[in-house]
Image (tube, rainbow, N blue to C red; front, side, top):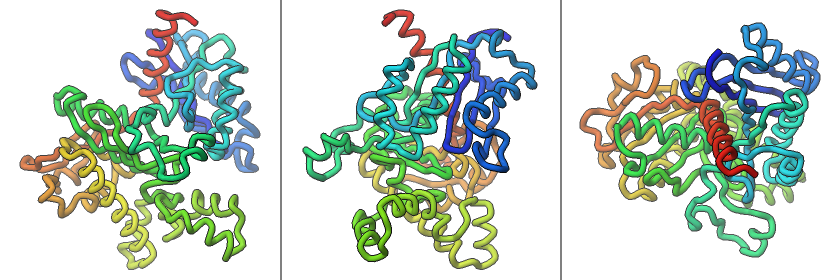
Length: 389
């Protein structure tokens, strides 16, 4: 097997995703997911056993990590706080620093750190590098990053808009500019990452100027099980009136809200079937999802002033033609005109779904966060070789 490879690991609380990537070619050599970690129905009791199972699966696919040119293990970490906004070579001291950030992302960072510790134990002779979801949005303009709250309190507790899905937004924006055959710094873009987790970004000349997720991945668009934007007063109201603890409210907003909370379903394929059968809850959930999405598109058109391209990506964005249609229908006066045949046609790779006379190009751009992480790891290694610590 020729060339450098990177093993990309994404550790969740009950799952471990892995993919072996050749950064130069962009080829995914193998990968998979070990789910239901620690559950009676699962194959792995803990993350260490899950990673060992991943290694076994790679071996069954004919891949020996000792001979495949493994250059690094790249770890997706959701929250980097204010301190971590570049791909970071991990050692004991940096892991200790990251552990202090767990309160900023209690649902995401602890399992990522567990995966890091296990991977360093099982692969001690290779570089382990953290790539952060928040990194791409680190330099948001102050007006976009700052919440209008007590400044001293915000500074003390690192409260700001961090943004998430950064590797996806960066990758998709670069692919969109390349597809249009234009320099990245000449293109104003809106990227819509629509999956079970969903976020939007406004990118001016290759630099993000706003994004929908905030201090946590809870803010912004309606998601599979997350509420997205909600009046902060709801929290105190439920605490006082429903005798719900803050932890219970937080869990409800993260796991029992969004499309699921309204319709009892988060898979959009089944949601569409429910709508077709006349299910009013499903119709309401879909309507709320689309309404919020259109609000963000309109807001970011205003933020950018001039927009060249809108890109749909991630599971829903790449595969649901109805969502794409309903997100931009009726926006012709804003320069957005969809071509329905292009929108509904099967296709792979980057493709245009807007009409020829649409001033704003509308694209479907498949995301590849694993490849983006792998390339970030190789760039970090190259910088370390040039400027050793």
